[in-house]
Amino acid sequence: MKVNVAQVRLSGGESVHYDLVEDFSAFDLGIEALSFQAPVHVQLQVNNTSRAMLVKGTIHTKLKATCGRCLESFEYSIELPYEDEWAFRTLATEDLLETALILDKDDIDITDRIFEQIVLALPMKFICSVECQGLCPNCGANRNLTPCNCGEGVIDPRLAALAKWQSND
Image (spheres, rainbow, N blue to C red):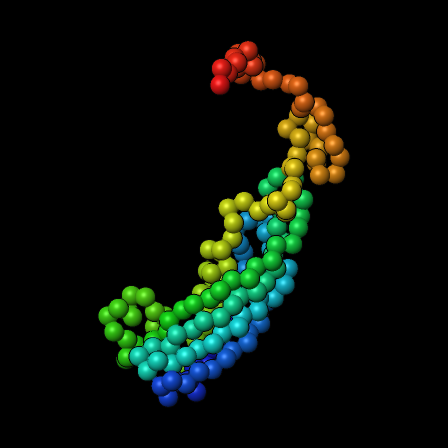
């Protein structure tokens, strides 16, 4: 994903809009049950403040994920806000050197920064829906598809003494 900031760099107060689309399917997310299902669509607004370039936009894509409860595959949509600050090395202050993307030329490859934002936004555990009932711990049936009664009335022997305890509240 390449952006050329030559036209916005030359004049302070200038603003440019970018609409980028790239296929990220070659990226390895490190999880075998996760893959890109749609190209990554990035919309950016780059504003030159004379000191740096403020970037705001959105990232849209879809991933194929596996539910952590029922183990079914589903499509996970991502829509993220994106904010960044870009500065040319010659104009960068000490603060900008620590926080901003430092530029040496007008052509910028932002693929790694976009990928980083997507990875940081991923949940620790994917769940297909809030109502997902998951798998039965006894028979392994998907409780979303078939009702299962094999776990009812079974009390863990380690907790059986608690069933005899009565509250006086």
